[in-house]
Image 1 (cartoon, helix red, strand yellow):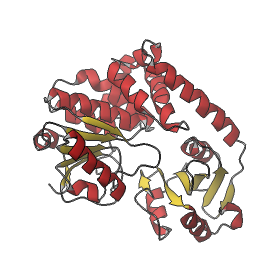
Image 2 (cartoon, rainbow, N blue to C red):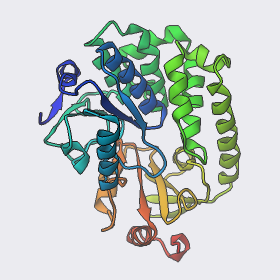
Image 3 (tube, rainbow, N blue to C red):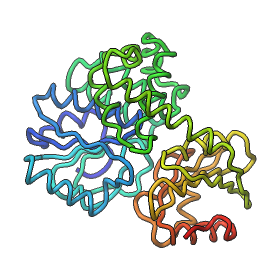
Image 4 (cartoon, rainbow, N blue to C red):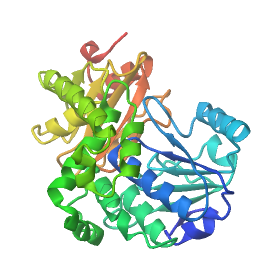
Length: 348
């Protein structure tokens, strides 16, 4: 099914998934919440989803991921594919089996053989978790999952965008929702990048206060990850930005995924329209970077104009005000030279 569909298309599309779809979600608060909502929805529809959380260095539209999905087919009998919060693009993975994409990022391509449920043309643009919740409502009485949609909205900094669902979710306690969203984000930012405890906790809990309560053992795992990330952020805050024209780059070196946090912090302090935090220690052989703006800049459009030749699907994804990517070292060096920076931001 070609094009972008309404959440009401979800009910029709899941009947093409067979009884054992592979559900793939991103590892942040929005992606995890969307994944849990969709997992519960699929089970309500008498399906038995297999869960795969996209983690450190993963790319859901790569040849490597296609091979992994084919292995799921042969070993676990997977019959369909559902992707959420991992972007929308063309790629080999969507040609294997019936595919549904529930996502709010700016598409880098529209796959011909997938049902794409996107609010990218809406104003405001719903997060993936909110899209998932709206899909769930077409399948069963899913109001009890509203708090999960709210976690994703808060996690993606869309709390003030005016979604009526967010206003309804305040009944769960806005402070608890904010704290839970922050805690759920911690594991994917840790050095291990393993967000499976966060997914498990969201599946077990019935609200944000239970996420925070310590009733389930996963909460302690998330708290430990949060402490690790906090310590790394404190070290990274000492890094000084380098500015050329409209771009500021803050170089850091951490095994934790703290570059989005550092970029967000500096974007509110610098006059440069685009602020990037470049992490040279996150993954060997790569430079991961997060780009944010405190102004009215279109970051994916800007990145498209300076795209290095070796960039892949991990480059320039995201939202108008929040994007980033991952580049191999050689491509990073080309990238920073294109932006006008000197050898001080290159790496070997």
